[in-house]
Image (cartoon, rainbow, N blue to C red):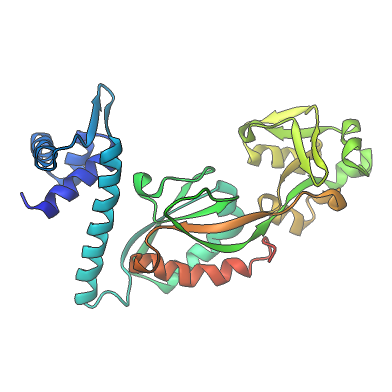
Length: 296
């Protein structure tokens, strides 16, 4: 088997975490996949996979090798597409990852316009609240809210969002508007357990502890409860963009708001990225930067 095919087989196993799943994806027998990986490990003199009853995962050396395989195979594929005249017209599937409410509040109209502009491309949009591992999870581009750790990836800033406290007009008519973060103790608050700090609301002067009357498992549920008039919710501004635009919610305590948080498109390969990635960045970046959900 050629080195090129060996890399394809190993990368499929590393990404799938299963010999059987990789075999199905490659339309090979599981025995062939196993023999290929064993032969590859023997040839390069290093264990690339850690085997367990649950499946397989890349060893530290295997993770580095998988990243190299991905880069080499993408470059080869890009060269072949370029020679075939496909470089100027991207084709295939682009996999994106972003927080669920970012897709709902901001990105979906941009995605539809992109698909209309590039009829040979398809999009796979995955909900992801944390920073994804692009290579391991097969993600081409991630729309990330927050600071990025040091990594080998590339980032394009598209704007900023801000922590906000909101409530429905009906609630404010009944209970009044808090004039300071300390006044939150006099109000019903709604928190989200998935953030990991349901009782700490961050403001410019520091965090304020609240005792939520309602704790929801997702930001979506907490926002719906606030729209229904139950109490105050603390979230990021893009998560309630439409509700604020429609007047279903109103911002509170704006003089005390914490510093904004950056929003970035995160991807690999830089200028060597595949044509589908470059076409997406060229299309999406100016539209995201112009979106009213983001600060400049």
